[in-house]
Image (tube, rainbow over the protein chains, first blue to last red):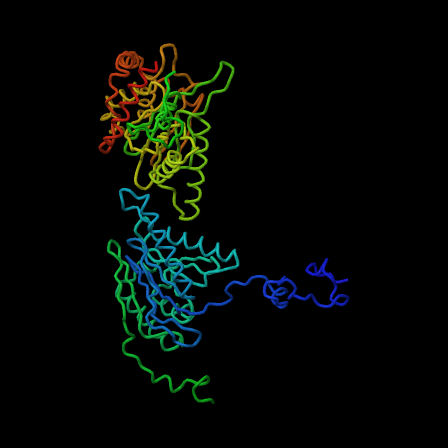
Length: 273
Length: 286
């Protein structure tokens, strides 16, 4: 006996021959393969991707940077993707991973901003960074629980209710953590050690000045451009400072590049040992 | 019984531009026993008079907790209030889960107002027959709102709804300035009870059985006090002021109807007119 419930109650092919799907167009496409295959599939991998988002807290704010590349596999397909955007007055969200899912997140947050406005008659009680982050966590975890994740790693930067800097991560699984320096993707390997030199301990961000933080982040962008083959040297850097609207600097370039180290690289496309 | 062609449903206007079913719903609030709310700068107090259907029966609950920072007092159809309070609780919990912060009092009250307004625009539905006082403390401070089944929502420093609530409103108008400066919760509660006592009929007294008190405010989560817990404040009620107030209340009950309870913002002109109309009708009913 065949123990697969799928075939219970069906005429046995060995006795009656295979079912003729052409009869009365009984099946969806007359395609046996499709009928017996897995019924539904959601995204199994990102398609157009954005690489790392790098961020660090300083004494009275946060800096977030991400390059403008949208890659299709290893093809550097788009070079004008802005992956950092503003939510409300004093919060920014940086997104890496699938670009179409990023655009979906952007739509959700725009919609959220509008609905929040409706119930905010006297103004000034917009969602702050912790609320935006919690919302995104719910959205991403909900999608992963439907086995249909939004394929992103997201960094939310802004301010807490008590005006201290806020920086927190959430990804496609709904995993979240907060730190003084957060990088996604390749940056989590390459940039984090550089940023940790400034903030070896989580509370050390209080001793970091804006200039130090900015210099460190720009250095990270350069190192990532050297080593991350999905990155570009054109990037956007956002500075959040207490009591000021977020400052967006677009089309920044990695300056003073020095590729002399490249001749010593071994393997992949370069000379073999 | 007079015949009215324009009150068969809640969505048809009369030629004079009134929605009779909605106005009847506002009358239902006046059938309920009184509830009073006052807000100081840091706290909001709700006090309410409970009624029992018969001597051996229990008293109808008048105060309902929504969340740690918010609660309501009701006057009118209690089952309708339960539906609204369940909705509010759901909203409060959902917001806490999604945004990790307590729901703003204003947002909560506007959401039930939207819900109530739908009933005035759908054929075959009935407006809620209950008025609510919504008290809350959130990041924007202490707030007291009045909710009406018409979907009208106004913020107040002091408000009273339910049977003979005009007397309480008169007391609140007289003591407004004093109340706004009050810093301790105790005297805020006593003011609330004084106002509530003014609404009583001749042969009724405030007792630990029929009095409910609730407080919410800065560093104070919403708490309802009933039975033995309210004796501490009933003992503080001043007998002299009681007698005086009751005289005023008896004379001035309907005459002072044009004075709305004190509000933080300019009262909506239409709302004032509606209140006047209600009070005149009430006279004819009695």
